[in-house]
Length: 188
Image (tube, rainbow, N blue to C red; front, side):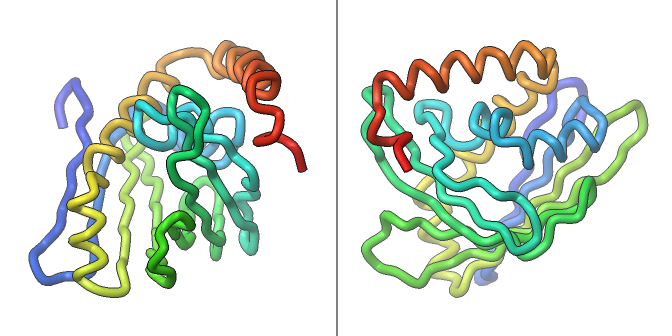
């Protein structure tokens, strides 16, 4: 994939799945940790112009998640949720994904993330998203899932290039700021 990592998307016509492949310049354990540590995950997951607010984030087998995606003014643009069916550190995550904000309910996606060791302390992540129908898949493609995935991966690559300690401290400061700005979003 060269010096500049890019996200490759495979979406064959008439099929119910999309596959994303991305290499990261970091060891598998660090990449997996970025997928399962709330203070890190909230800094990279989702489109660049939105902030992820983790209302529920329990990445373990049988756990669940619920994420508010906030615009720059702090308003919720959409909410995603799902259940973790398998979390096998640092190899694999199997979960469902559903847009809670979609008025047409029942369009869950099965997501399988495989984390593969590569030479030189690099990692390849393969994400296989399986939709209920080809129409669901095509709707997600038309909604910009490729751009959102690319932006998320770029943000993650930048975080992995920096010290996790610095990122963690910055996230703590940002979370406290967000709590002060939007206390109702952080109340139980």
